Image (cartoon, rainbow, N blue to C red; front, top):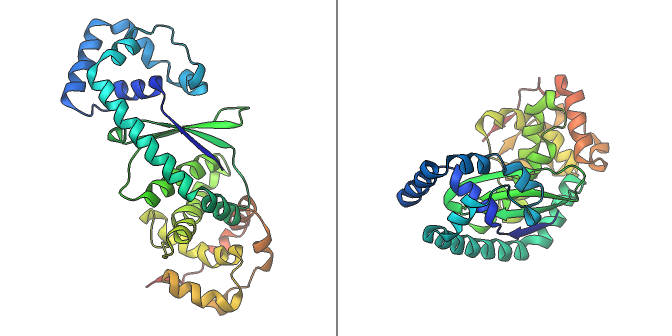
Length: 277
C-alpha cells in the first residue's frame, strides 16, 4: 500500500458545495450561488464521479461555479487550512509508512494498489473512496481529523481495507466486516501503538470477533503454547483444550482465512465458552 496526499480544487469545492455547510458565511454564499446560477449549480453536482476518475486532468462542462468559489475569500482561507492539513498528513505518512507497509503485509499477506488521497477540509468530516477500473491508483477523499496521528493513520487504513474487501463474499458481510476490524482496528492498531486494541470496534461485531479470535491467533502464527499470553494481553478468554490448532492457517493469506471462517462457521460460531474480561 502506498498513499499520495494532494489537494485538488475541484474536489474541495464540490465537497464544500454539497456537503453540510461548515459555517454560516459559507452557507449564505452557497445559497447565493444557488439562487443566481441554478443550472450551473446542478451541472456541477452531477460531475463528482467524473472528477474522481481523473482529478488532475478534469475539465468541467461549465466552470462558472468553480470560478466563483475560487474568488470567494472564505474558500481561499479554507484552502490554506486544507493545504496545512495535507502537510500534516504527509509528515504522518512519512513517519509511519515503512512500519505500516511491513505490518499490513505481515497481517494480510496481500498487497493493494496505490491510493491518491485527495485531502479536503477536516471541518467537512467526510471521507469516500472510488476504486477506478483498470487503474493502478485509486482515489480516496479524506476530510476527517482525529486527535492523534496514529488515529488518523489507522482510520485511513481501515477505510481502505474495508473498500478493498467490500465485494468479497458479499453474502457473508458480517464475517468479512468482523475480520476487517480484526486486521486494522485490532491487530494493526495494537502493533502500531504497542498496546492491545482488541476491545475496539463496532459493538455489534464484538461477539462475532471473539468467536473468530482463537482462529485469528492461529492465522497470525501464534504458537499454541503462547495462546494464553495473547488472551491475557487482549482480555479475551477461551478454553484452548476445546480448539484444534489449525497449523495451516499461518501460511494462508487474508482471503483464504476469510474463506476458512465461512466454510467452518457452523463450528466456529457455535462455541460459546469465550468471554471478555
